[in-house]
Length: 121
Image (spheres, rainbow, N blue to C red):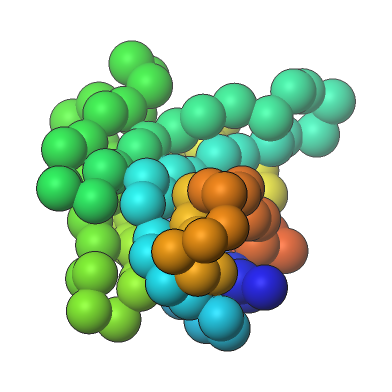
């Protein structure tokens, strides 16, 4: 099994910054695409940013230019640098990773437990 643990959430004022981390551990053969999702109260979970194993990134339109996803493949860790935070960025942020526990297993989806980000004045 692969475990994902997020950290770095908290309370920040509008215009502020936070950096989220997602560390994968456990029985890891390979971690492929890593992503950040978020879910605000009363809303569906949405994909925020994705980074492939090769480092290609993609973002949902309303965070482009403000959020940056990165990864340290040697540490099986992904990051989400969030700048110029807005009230509407308030949500629980979840890490997602596609990975294998051995060369003989299929690629599976793994989720972290989520970290709360609250943007408030």
